[in-house]
Length: 372
Image 1: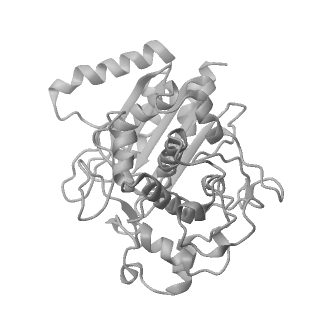
Image 2: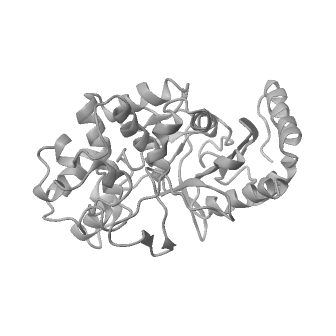
């Protein structure tokens, strides 16, 4: 178990554990046991949040932020979210729709007039629900730099991704006809936010989401422009131990995965979603409505897909669920929300040998079983 560094912090953590026992009848020890393998003072680990009935009922860190300082992970430790970021990018677009500056059926080229002709049929809605047909920029890079070590490619940014897409002659399929997950679509959405709002994507996130929700340590990380406070660094497990693997050629893009945050701030995000702080319940409905491609049901290599705007919507054991994972060099993350059960589980890990979704669902099972 992670030891508290400040004696003064003990009452607050004790209060959280008391709330857990009183409100959910799931003991903190039951939740803690799910993460027993991550307890360490020498290895990277994870931060875990459980919220139910509008209250945080479990919040704990496991392992260390990096191998140099060996600072324990806690509630304020910031992790790179990777694709978990997409729900924030979608919220930016939805806020612009709320402002009357965008419509979901506007076209990509309405905002980005310089985009090639193949982008004209693509709507904002197509970008949000992964039916745009835009090729994933990671696949384009792999073709351009075959058998090239990642460190020799250099980091690509959102504007450069847009340039890559502008060099393509066609999409992968007619917009709206199929579903295919595309990081490119969310990079383009970030560029649209900038073009329509007149602000940088980072500034729009900060002004419209992070500041109103008092997510004081959350940011879209841009090397050389800002710094991540209380930062966890990514790691990979190798035969002889751990290696820091924190950045890759695709770690600098923002719209598809560039946000850093903590479970402390994500508790505020979850509460805002629960209470419809940023958008009304009616305004959130498009994000929670599964896409229906014209060519047949959405699917991937893993099976049928139910996807809205920045959220997967597949139910879990009969329970309504909205969720998203994140996976990038050195990090694995997940948020699992069960709106009808008023339950949320978040896991942020700075190691690649864990499956946060599987762990989160084990935790969810503890609470969902108590409600049966």
